Image (cartoon, rainbow, N blue to C red; front, side, top):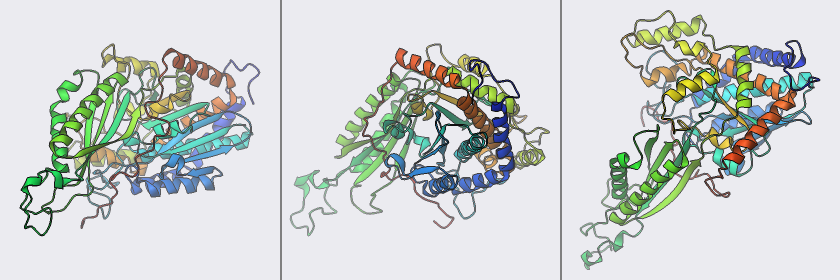
Length: 529
């Protein structure tokens, strides 16, 4: 049902407000349950491409809620796509993430401690993606409830996106057409950098992200130095013969040369970053054999595609040289290749108006006591208000944009990295941030250790305000879009304008498959392992 003049806002007492009230009341009534669900996902803490139990939980929960769910969408075992329809109407999409980070196990407590039975090097939620997924799920289910109560037509779509930390799934879902039928997409992330806290992005969205694995393979060590073979040796590869350098040498050469060349890859401006990870597989343990395979993953974040391509050219040259030195072949696998994001002012304004109606997160007495207890454990004088002031304040998207631009050169159009950017090339998208609990700066300027923020992301009293605020904001935004067709029409017109002005085709082929078979970390270490 729409207003007689769809170009004007609804009065406060009209049906859209009624539907929003219904959605908010649903979240209020289920807040304890949502907190329990979040704790479950947070405790599972499965790393990228290995989120089997987390994904299974979402699939089961969505089916129980009446959604039709494709399990393992786009050939990714830990992805899914869920749909629910209430008749004719627009298709609105949001998504869950649930991958954790190896080496960051932390218990939901006020001192540094890995989760029960695990090494501190086991995975843990850092951002936390557990809260990202439960926030969007809360908004999705609250919207569905309001649509049923108020008989609102439309279709809800919810995708499960594994391996966000390496931009793994959204590029694949996009290439396979999973976003093509969306009329609007809402993208959420818990706050992780100022000034983007309790606001929506305006013009400066995330930039390009490339990730690639170079595998050095020594399949023919016997051809390294044929003349040294001992004719009397009982085996062709005598331990006394000259040994091929092997895959570890290639990896070491690639690692050191690429690190040494960082200053030559790109100019020292623009907020770009470069990271690497060694993937283990096929190593001979304490034996006198050349290592057969060694894998090195590189990931780099740049403001634009041109800069990303320059880094790629350097790495490809280094890989070829390293392989040649070590008597190896080099195999290359893309993990992700994402384009910079597209803004949509129409959707940003709609979402922020809903956030204003909800207000910022509020931390109750139990949350305050938790924050003070962590400060005490770290030797910081506990504060009356232990959380960063910005976490309990709103900032308009345009003001956040102004502050953000002060930190960047004029030529730079994009900043930092997140894989929602790929979705913004298929449909109008809004990206927003709600505060996660973050401690206020200490009086002496000492930084807090990472475990403190990670713990706050798992303690119900401190993380539930994030889930509540984000869920209600998503539901309100969806309900506005369902009942005011002109908003969607305007958002689509803006999207089409931006695409026409700057076309950006996908950077990977249509048949690109997610590299789920590579030896990604797949463990839950306990103290004895």
